Length: 99
Length: 235
Image (cartoon, rainbow over all chains, first blue to last red; front, side, top):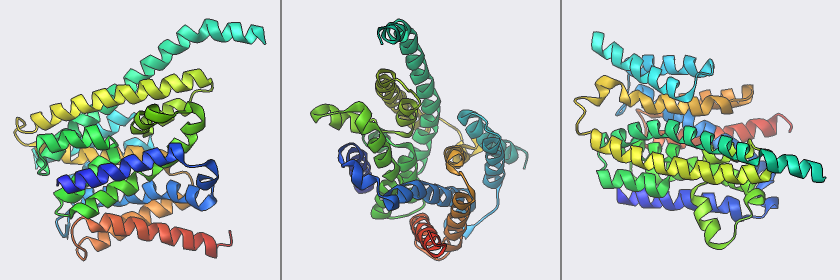
């Protein structure tokens, strides 16, 4: 686990530093701009899907999906960040309590 | 010119107070998420020390949740580190926008780089006045750093006290937070299509690929497809 922590830390820090050091011309390339706009969208979407619907190698539909759906609606309605998180977690908690 | 200078100077204390108040507010909001990060990390099998190391050293929320998520699901160290690093690519772009504003050199640049975040960048670029923007960057960065780390420690220690974190829905906190982070970025049909494609691909790959890799593979595949589609579209 320390390997993942330290390698990931190094990667994340160097990327932060690169932005402050690299000449503008490189990062203003359209491909670089596009990739940095697209990467977080694709990775976060994939991460959310896996965290919500996967248990090990199985796809499951449980209280997480309901909590996620409520959080999605709240986020679409531009609810504040904390409210989105609280509604998502709260929905899953209530469902688990009554089932 | 002297008139505008006077006005700017007179309004500076008020602007400074506003910037500092916003910085603390953002720190508190992020701190609440830090609590759930600390708890989830320990539940995923990380020690309290490892959890705090992630918040102190990596200090990038989405990347930290990715490491914990990937390794917690049984993924390898390299996959976890790679996913975290790729999620950090956006910080480079923030840094580029901040570089001309902050004009950092030497040690200050090395320290400032650690504080390049979604929050500090957003607060700095939202200010028109360079002096306010610089203050917003440092104040928000430091506020988030302090509160995020205190909250992480609290969550990590609290995880052992909680009877059953799943009963509190804590496992939904991370995906819910990511959705809240993701939605403001989804401007236009193309980005929505990318997000849906990446999510769908990841789910298709869950039964097929080793644990932890679907997120990485699906994310990268979706990006390549997006570039190919754009080229085919004639742009």
